[in-house]
Length: 118
Image (tube, rainbow, N blue to C red; front, side, top):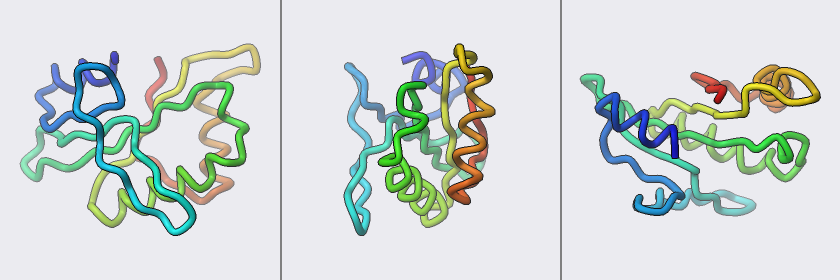
């Protein structure tokens, strides 16, 4: 909810989120399975650049099923000229969550535009 409100405060438009009170983002069709992003919106730049945001709970960081989901989101971001952002908790008992996520993304050859820590 925090990211949706923050993006609205920044002037981003067309905010869709898997949250109460927001329209759901469109389903993305994949070759193995379909996925719905956690949040999509358009940035306030002159191109109104699309943004896809994936929220990653710490309990799911090691889940091998995420490989398909993240690969599909990365492909969709490239196809639509969107930025791909991830959001993770700032810290866990295992250490810095953003570092763990970066390692997972690097292993999958997925590049993100930004990793938010909250």
